[in-house]
Image (cartoon, rainbow, N blue to C red; front, top):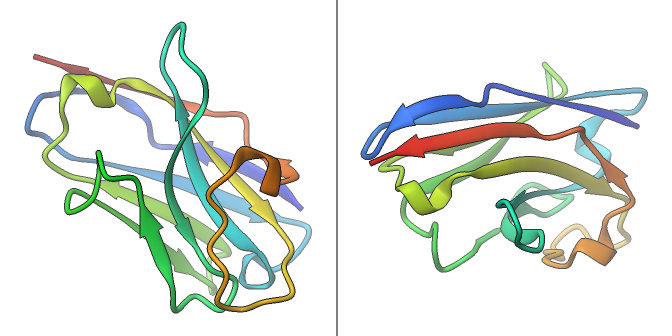
Length: 126
C-alpha cells in the first residue's frame, strides 16, 4: 500500500487543522493505521492509532481530547482532526499502516508499522 499525507499548514494556537492520508494499492480497511509526528531535533513519537477493525482507537496523552483519528473506507483515506492546537504540536506528521491479525489491536510503536507516508508539516504559532 502507498500512503500520501496532505493537509498540513500553518495555524495560530487554538486553531484546527485536518490532515489526511490517502491510501492506494490496497483498501485501507485491511490495515491498522497510526499517526506519528516528529518535531525538529526530536524522535518520532506516537500520536494516534486506529485498529484494523476500526472500533478501537488510542491517543497520546498530549493530544487526548483534542485530536481524533478516523477512517473513510469509501475514500480509502484516514484523517487526523486536530483541534485546540498548541505550539508544541508543531511537527511533521506521518501516517503509517501495517497488516494485523487482530482486528482490535492498537499499535503504538514505530516498529509495528511497515508502510509510511511522506509526512506533512504542521506549524502552530503562539
